[in-house]
Image (tube, rainbow, N blue to C red):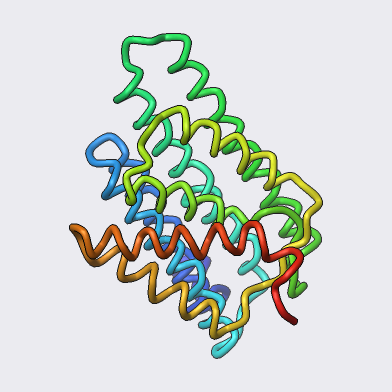
Length: 223
């Protein structure tokens, strides 16, 4: 008896599954080292971009869009929310009200990500643009923020609330052109691989690029 996925899933789907696995690794790492957890989330984002490249070259499957959204829930919904909770518990451990507030906002972030991904799968997966801030972008901003030292819990809680609202907004974001996605991917990869001041520099560069796309993409990203 062979596994059911044999003959039904392709190479791109395997890359997508690795994205989900990295999301789980990131979730576990939030209890050990928030910086490593942030890097695991960024690595999952690299896998998320790579599966699209693989699908364009080798073809996708009918299950691909659903698998992609399910993986994104783990990597860009649950994992970044747990990252925020880890920082909140570390900094506000003896302040019960603020800890509960942080957990509530993180839960809202997860719910917004799930709804946004469901809407994307149903209505936007075949388009070259999407409605609402992509979950990958929201998770990248939170993770890069942790890597550059923005570990003030209130800042992360407020940023999480803003990202949750923007994921459910009606703002249209165009897909990145291949060359721009490549540049961001290289910066992202260097932020993951390098440590110390140099690594923080690339993390800051990634944060700058992500925030630039967040605020300028809907209006000024060229066609």
